[in-house]
Image (tube, rainbow, N blue to C red):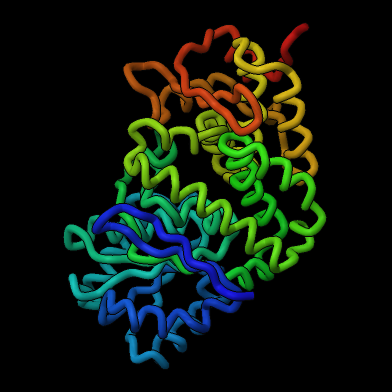
Length: 365
């Protein structure tokens, strides 16, 4: 399979996304050519770092590039200011300066942490993304959103800070736990449901090949998602308007994720959130029942959850919704589907309709 490159066009902040098989073995030469830094701090969690950390260090060394592997405990619960402080201290102890760079090796949590750390360490040093989860490959590694969680909500502290490059090796998906792959599929489905109906239908038609991790199909899927993300980010880098459509399913999804104490993984929460806003759109009169039914069917085909867990406290859910970073003037904005591949952003949602959806009710008629 020939590697493919998608360019994110942001003027002087533009960067390439390279997708290919066996890309980890070629990162050293690519970084040597790019001349981004003289040394890299490889930031990874204690799971992914064990799998790929030494391999990346060896590849960089062969290219004449120095590196330091710096690990943190895996999981969303590490995505906080304490982790950032600890990692910054390690960088300082090892004399990292503005001539150095960071390399995010891992999933979405690692990418968010590393990007945020890079944006604030010495007021900003370069970083590159090497995403190892499907979710990070198709979504969070692209676009420059960084951040950490606080007790009041998810991603409430963060920055917009673009990487210098993104390297996506499709081979690493072979070591990804099944539930993490399915979690990533929720973000893939998001693009079809909110942006492109043809892609949505393609996902349904190619389900067996995708779940079997057929290389050409997986590469095509990842490339298409990156193209969608790049196109949106190029038009709205800092989420002033259009980019909000990429939050489809995330407003309720983030609340569900946080209310579960992050026991529910991100993609599963987003799947639940997409199903919830589809039901909300039906109740608000923006979509007919067929739209919600099609979305729920595809989510179920990929073995993704669609119902808000009954054990979650609904009052806690509402508090997290109000604390969402996309809330303005006390109004929660939702991305609601009007049709497959078409959404609207609105704060015109009645409390009774939202309460019914959070309670698990279905629309009448």
